Length: 197
Image (cartoon, rainbow, N blue to C red; front, side, top):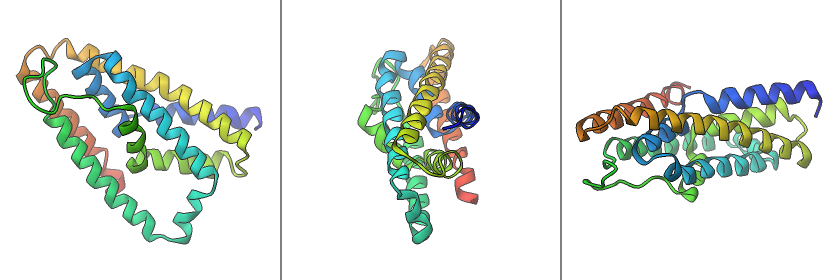
């Protein structure tokens, strides 16, 4: 990979992983509700899921969308349904003291599997393979994985810390419920590009 292409890939990785989307909205909410350490498994799952998607795309999975277009429609429907379910889970999350049901952060496996129904993750992986790795060799896929993992580590950590800082204002169950509902609403809004595409 040329230095110019690597620099472009790094810029794209930070832009793609740092902007608001389903992962960052959920990490923000998790940081506010559970703190940084309990959000780490969620973040590790994001990084793992993105890495496996990049490997799969590099191995040719992206071509399946070109050969069989209904697959993309099915993915869009499944993604939308699952994100709406997650928005509901965030909106009804328990306060940290566990006064109501449903108060657990995402696990590594849940967050990794979520990437496979996350429209933004699919878009990122497809863009990397088509625009930055037109001839995806194992070495270049490895570079892309390291680049995206590093960018996501920084970006997700910033979003989690923003959630933790925001939690200082969430000192009552009513405020926390309002915050969680707002995060759920933002997660639903992040679906807009998927629905209209």
